[in-house]
Length: 464
Image 1 (tube, rainbow, N blue to C red):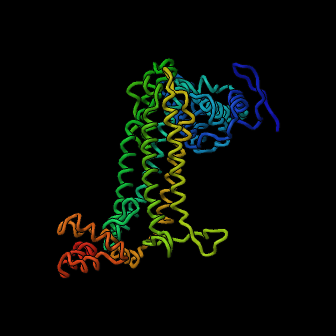
Image 2 (image 1 turned 135 degrees about the vertical axis):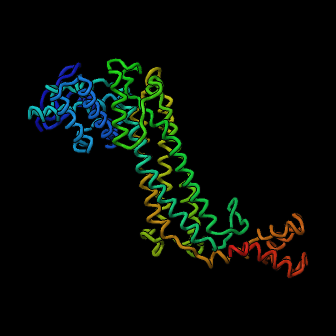
Image 3 (image 1 turned 180 degrees about the horizontal axis):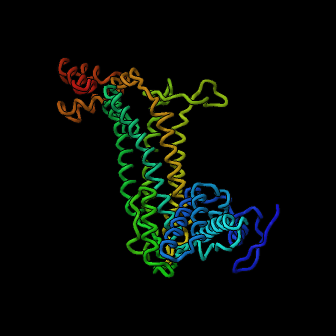
């Protein structure tokens, strides 16, 4: 590999000849390469989008030469479409303001703009990464702006649509299973009968409420820090700079972005992303409950609950032939665990707003965007590879109801709690069903007992 010499305020450094980035990025890579993990493309592409609109607005305001502005806009558009994703090489674990990533993007865009103008890749002339690409900006307002934009668009365009698909599928199953009677369970013990449709309707509502929670955080994510520059007071930024860029971003994304009400809050704190992560985590917790229930309901197939059947996707054992595991529910549970862990990191990151700047922005961005992407994919896989293919094992559902000691609950309004409990205990002792024990104990006439138990087992006539 051949290298070229680049300089920054700390001296010179050797940069790969084919790189668009320059000395500051190379120095960051050499100093900060810890994990090999980079901020996701969605994040750096948003930064490139900000740079594109910044150049356009600076041209419009008469602050930037037309030829330079057009070259920056062209280069930034290419970066925003992912053309230079391989050039954004700074580790996630870097300076807490994300300055290294901001400069990585500045240098790539400047390097490409210079190539457009001079046919020589990289460098700082005629387009300078700080003076021209970063004009009117600071890492301290660009990075939190990119975080809010990428998080909000990810929630709106990926996670919510995925959850809406899952909600539709669960709602369909609730309707499909509305007449399938089964035994309810509390504390892992037999409870009174219900329908499988009612059980699935609860899952559908959990997802519906998750969507509502995600929508509720959007107004706070829509506030953007852009325009605050160094510490929130907007030094070196034209008063019209941020409002015009933000309006362009809103028009481009279809999201109601607006300038932060208070720039000092927007840069010193990350409460909106902590709140958003909490909503995403709540969705993960909901999906854990749903996936675990489905895993248990499908357990067996002969010696478990076996009340539903889920699609068989792959052999489930390296030693036990014929075994098929509930792989998709287990995938969902693992994704949810990762999201919950990410939320803990984001919470700690949110605590790191020190005076006028939060200094854990890269790790907050990395974890929040990973959580959004993981859940978005997991919900669609869950819907397509599991929920859509669920069928009811109606015979197994029915067979457990008559055997349940919880049927004694139906006797309580007529004979009282103590006598009903005695019937249940005797049935358990003798191994008989509650109906038979109640009949033998003569607690009520046979016709009345049958009416009570049939109502409990079969439900309301209109639901039969």
